Image 1 (cartoon, rainbow, N blue to C red):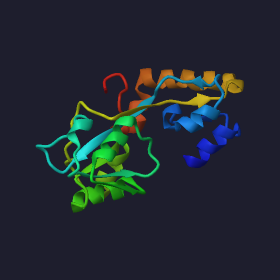
Image 2 (cartoon, helix red, strand yellow):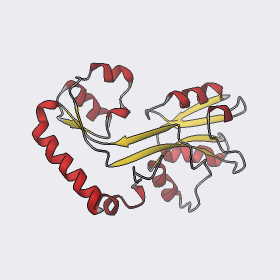
Image 3 (tube, rainbow, N blue to C red):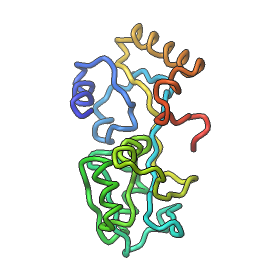
Amino acid sequence: MKRAKANFLRGSFACYSPGLETFSQTERDVLPGDLLSSQAFNMALVRVVSTEPHRLVSGVEDVTSKDVVSLVRGIPVSAAMQQMMGKARRTFTVQTELENLKLLMSGRVNLIFAFYPDIVFAYKELGIEAHFPYQANYSPLVIRDNIVCHSKHKQAFDLIEAKIIEYRQNGTLKTLLKDFYLDTLTQP
């Protein structure tokens, strides 16, 4: 994704996905103002996953200096996530959601910022059926996956946008993505 983003920023790639929300503010500042942005076709949520079912995080105020947090290096970080990391005793960064989940399981951290649906792969790889608890109605970061294109590629963009709409309406996206499809109309 890093290479695709860099090439899109340079104008070498016509389009980029999963969308502008994955760009830092510095990266957004160099993008032209006339980008085309498609309808969302999926979403990703960051959940604050805990080892303790009785202590779920539903806001920045729930993280204390006793907490140790981990997250995957390079994921977008919201202001709320930064505040939580600032309040925690320590923050670890790891390469993958699998490493993130293993840290939680080992007890080295008591909270992880887990990217859904990506972490579902980690649970499956470890053969874990029941997911660790998180506050279901709270996400410090929601990314609506879409496609952005440079305006000179409007003709291609229009074709892509039409397919996204068609696949959302006829259920193709849900069929293809299965458990990894998070319906943007029903999630927070």
